[in-house]
Length: 78
Image 1 (cartoon, rainbow, N blue to C red):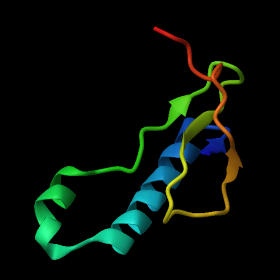
Image 2 (image 1 turned 30 degrees about the vertical axis):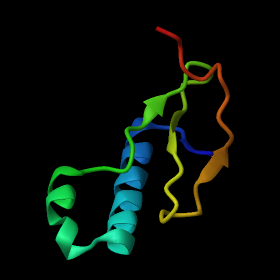
Image 3 (image 1 turned 60 degrees about the vertical axis):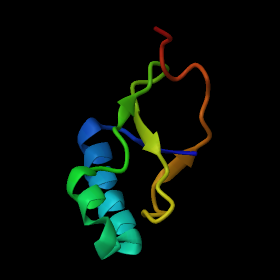
Image 4 (image 1 turned 30 degrees about the horizontal axis):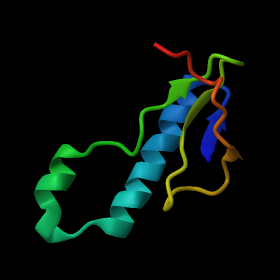
């Protein structure tokens, strides 16, 4: 499942919030080095099909976002 947004900024803001929620739920002091180098949950991407912005659902993030199942035609193949 992916969270879906109309703009890049909406996706970036939501992803930042989701990452903080994920970090709060999983932070362990012994993993401090990991948390110093991990700065986000996912990188939002623009879909080729409709120009909406998406990123993989974070298990500890907000459940208020529009969510859709991944479709193979969302991103162009390289």
